Length: 192
Image (cartoon, rainbow, N blue to C red; front, top):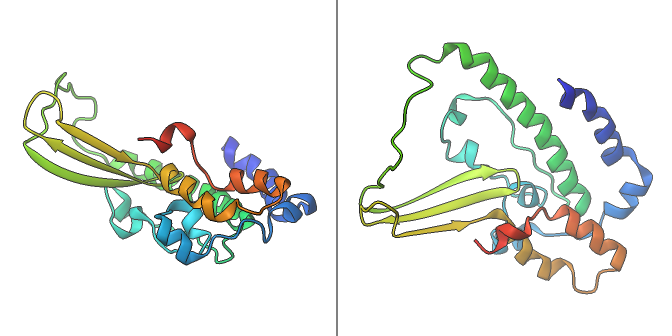
């Protein structure tokens, strides 16, 4: 309710504010080829024209049962990245409403007691999930012991930071602010 009510203000700022448009349109263009080469995902990749979303293309949990569009743009600039992020917020609100509409159809136990330790079976597995910044990948190797032998996490931030090497050289200092803000990364995520 509150988020949807406040969205018009944010929408107006991103889509119609002359100062914001001047600082983001045509700035920090990441081509689709470069986005793919760096492994970018989420709004950063989709703003460059890469139409990929794990929730739609390799559904997990209940995503295969939900109806939602994948937001894309083709400009690949800062503005396209901000627009993708903004439009993804509308999509996320719609997904949340679809889930709430179905919550009364859930059957079986919801609040169950779980064991304190869950041993992963021996072997290895890879899973990926769509997150606000893009795709996170999880590679788990287990020897069947109490704790996993190895866990490797590949975050969307890692790929997005790599792509900065294409966007930052030669840019103006004011453009750097827009580029860094639109590339969507969390520094603590990069070294996972």
